[in-house]
Length: 520
Ligand SMILES: NC(=O)C1=CN([C@@H]2O[C@H](COP(=O)(O)OP(=O)(O)OC[C@H]3O[C@@H](n4cnc5c(N)ncnc54)[C@H](O)[C@@H]3O)[C@@H](O)[C@H]2O)[C@H](O)CC1
Ligand SMILES: [K+]
Image (cartoon, rainbow, N blue to C red; front, side, top):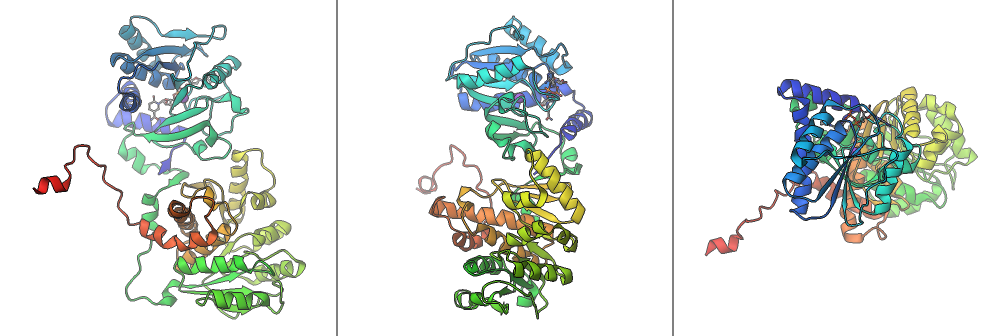
């Protein structure tokens, strides 16, 4: 799913108005009616007080459209204009007049000196104060109004985006923004719904199709994409009947150290279960017995050192190398890693201590083959790019690193973000059950396994993160969060693959006769 920038949203409006020969007012009406329908479907005429707070821009215009339809359908509506500027957009003014005609009175103007209306905890607030046009922090008195919303404990439904939240920057203070229970976003979600610093401002969100012209949606490329099954399916490579294990590549995993051989076991199993034809692991001698006995499909090469990797000598020609899981950062391993990078030409997936060793010797970044996939969690990322002030600063730093070395970064988190230069792919599969040791090793194995099968590195990163999270989403139904383990993520991978081909359930029609009754 494409995530459009603010500029693209405005462009889309204009394009749609021209192509469909409609006015922006009609577009605003269309958007407002979608919001009214959402409310009407759920409220069914209930006389719960609805407080509609409208800014003086088009977001406010949307709010006035909704207020008018609510009044016309007999709802208990109180409409306010939050008068934070003397400017008025045309869309606002047209709907302001329509509201007057409908209610025979102007909506209540709220200014810096006015008392705020009383709002009960069981009331509903429609937040149409600011939309994507917010271009500076809201005035203090408006911020106090937002705090008044929160203090009321009423249900807050935000139009397009919680007011006070910009689409491309973190707020200065958490109190500067409306805390929404639900946000109805026009045409596409916003990046801020997925970032740790800003996702909290809307407990839930959904996208409303406001009828932006399909041609515009189709032809407009976006830098940011929310990964859905529809984006993944075209990436999937169906297997040909006349294929053999060589067709699916030979993955090599390098890692492990005394007491952390399990990381290599997890990564190797994940590489196998994600479809690699052959998998070899290069480990210290202490890994030989446990791995040969626990993963019969795995071939092994051992280091001369018993407990850690000291000299990476690879007598095979792997398709792809996954390096770093459980590897440790001892002196010997650090020098072996440096020597390895100095002579390696194979595509790389680098994780865990491989990332920590890169952070210790930044000059090694120059040695990475292009399109190398790095999979840092937050701490490992900080070692690579330094501290960040907020998620947008983090993204800027990550984009710079990706552009500088032409590499792919998998920023693991609640919503894992895959960064390739200025392109950002948001993964929405996964759940807190993944917050357990070894799941990162599994992800490394999956991405390595996909690259062994000729998935391009960026595709493998996106597809691998999707599968990893989807597997956990299916497994959580059997294990819950607490009992989720990295091994269970591996064992549910097959279901994640098969789920790709499950057709979504058609919506059940309410009056569908039960088959048995019609058979009599
Ligand atoms: N296709 C769509 O997505 C559609 C979206 N619509 C709605 O339009 C808004 C964007 O409207 P816009 O008027 O550009 O911005 P706002 O409503 O957010 O208006 C804010 C308004 O006030 C000025 N302003 C910004 N920040 C401040 C501030 N801190 N203090 C004072 N004034 C401020 C700014 O100049 C704006 O003019 C979008 O979110 C949707 O809700 C279309 O209506 C339908 C299609
Ligand atoms: K809003």
